[in-house]
Image (cartoon, rainbow, N blue to C red; front, top):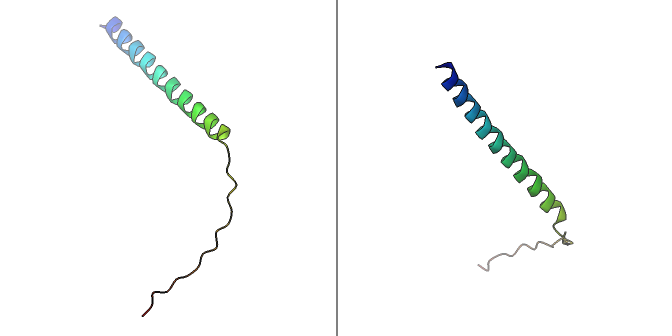
Length: 54
């Protein structure tokens, strides 16, 4: 019984560590590609209030 319990815990730990690794890799690549994205120069837009004719 103890051997089966140890096997289940080992399998759960292996799956959990793989899932954690996938999430970390996703985060690293997401940050990396966000930093490599070309920046566009943003110009300030003049906002004009337009009133509807009455």
